[in-house]
Length: 456
Image 1 (tube, rainbow, N blue to C red):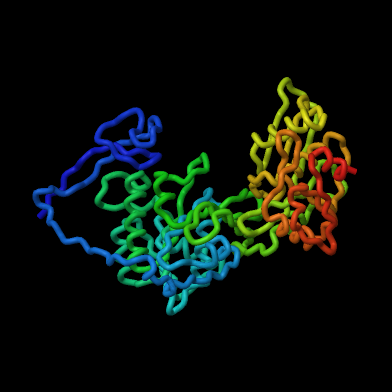
Image 2: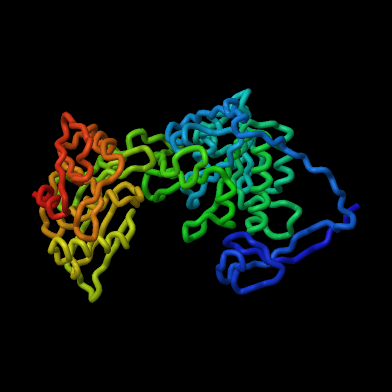
């Protein structure tokens, strides 16, 4: 019988690389003070039994058929959209997000809806007891005879249960609580997370079994565990939103089977999460019409155009250094646009506090929002209203010029559907653009020209 002996090595928390001795700097990724000591239980090489490895058949790519891997449609249309059209057999999906944001709620209610006699689902929980899961399921009305609950943290026991039950879908909540007895390190450490994930990926690929993993995040907002965890999985979804608001956003960060910028919008209710089929109407529902500093933009999230209200407030500073505060947008982008307003458009905002807010909790990252941001700030500085029926779509360059944006026709079609009458866009987008029945398109070459048509 093989003798077990302990071996100490140091593992990087950032990249997962191992080194036999401690160093101040990781030799693999170069990060400082990221090596932690771990003890691995190994078997003596003298007593180890050499077993022949199973070899997979090698085939030309043209001979491989993917027709026998249809996607499994989930009950939630928003969830299907983010996954790229449904759940792919053998895929491993990692769902991350802040504590209490709704990760377990979403997976539990979708699992209960999917589970049937021919589609058994195994829910492995390492954080809650079976009774706690049942209490939540009763509240969500998500009880099913074919949804099996396994309170377990040892990966070997979980794999044995999968072999015994033979489910069609496995949910692990969460991967940071799982451990393997082959390692002496604590659950949640770099080696434990990596090894348990690898075992689940191997199971998923060999049995064409889809697996959902719930992942914790750190206080900085990054997924806990090694960075290699994000590379190992097929799909990475992040659940975003403020717990003080009703709406949650499920964002696709990585997807080997679909778009990487797709989002799904949900509303948190007392009976669980519900789809929001028209996010633009929701984000604009409480917009104040006769208020300065408010503009509407259209941003693309994957294949979906979403209209969002941008609010700006500019006031004379009471401190020595003006404040720049944003919610839902990059503060560095705001500083850049304030420089354009000061230098190119003649607005003296250097001595003003500027506050910017993207209403609804949506995170705006694309440059197509630039014109709407500049217009809302200029409106607040001059304390003059913006035409409430106008939408702004353009990227602003450092010279004050308006640059063309992608998917302009889809954005304008969404604006027309929601009743907007005018749209100010760059001249570069004029070529090949069709005419709209109820929407007047105004082309502008510079931000100064756009402001003349915008602020009343």
